[in-house]
Length: 200
Image 1 (cartoon, rainbow, N blue to C red):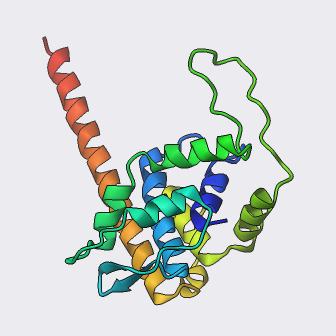
Image 2 (spheres, one colour; image 1 turned 120 degrees about the vertical axis):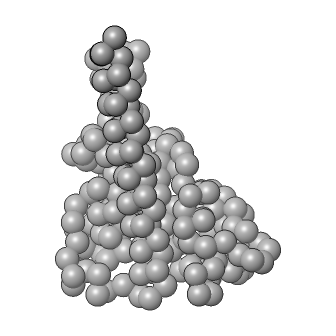
């Protein structure tokens, strides 16, 4: 199991905030994949550049896909380059993987909003592992979740991070801040456009 999968399980929990931004979660998942790849030495940080290593030994299809997506030629990409390139639609991909594995109930259909969702599996090792890490306040998972808008972290939690983990998580936070600023800019522009039309 991976940090990215654990984060997606936490985000898909029945009591999760429905207003969670998919873009924020996607960037956090891309950061989680990087940390997972670092853990298995499939990538290393050289300054702010991601240098590919050995192919990971894992059966996790999404992590294998992430490893194959690493840029193999110098100049290698930065953490933020990776987040923006890997992130789009990543939240949906992880959600679909959870649903296929029976770890999350299918999202409610827009065509049938009153259809009852099938219950998600509740007695699996993956769900227990994610729950245990979340309850224990495991630093990497806690900081990634907070960046995506789930929970908060303390200074003590941040102190438990390794340097490379901190570098990735700083990149995630910066990318999500940029995304929030872009949302705000579009919202302001949209409101201004609406006001113009109201004047006619």
